[in-house]
Length: 200
Image (tube, rainbow, N blue to C red):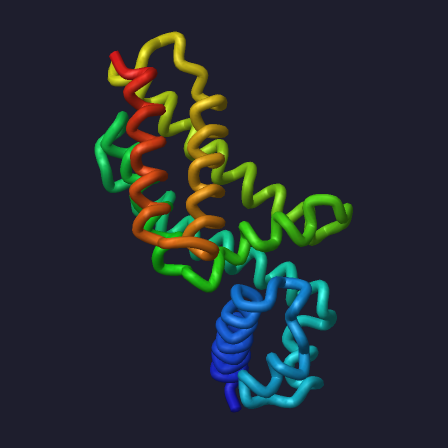
């Protein structure tokens, strides 16, 4: 078998394993990833799964990165198609709320925050990096809305990003625990109030 074909097949198998691992981690948490369950879901042996990652922690890191990448593609990158200023900022919020709606089993990264917030190590570092990236991207969108004159000049971009995160976290939790439509309506009302209070 040519090297390129073997490499392509290996990459495809790794992607398959990651897809299955992502689904399991959304349901059970990153710490709930079982090599046995994953091997069964991927139709492979345990040693076959390990061959692609080398360790359980490496697999967990890859799954966290996968979760961050999926969120980035569905929310942050997609919002870049909107005009700078409030259209882009509102798109981030809208797509984020849609992400919560479409991931009723839970957001892998948000779940990982609870799992690793007080546990130093590579897994916590990966979660912190993902959250920092999302927070900074949101703050940049706020800053652009200030530059376009749609938000007041004295608006603190990092504070607004923090508050957007707070609303999104509440929505994430309430969607899973209570009535999803009501949670979405309350979250949108909170965001409208936040933006209005800083609007020009």
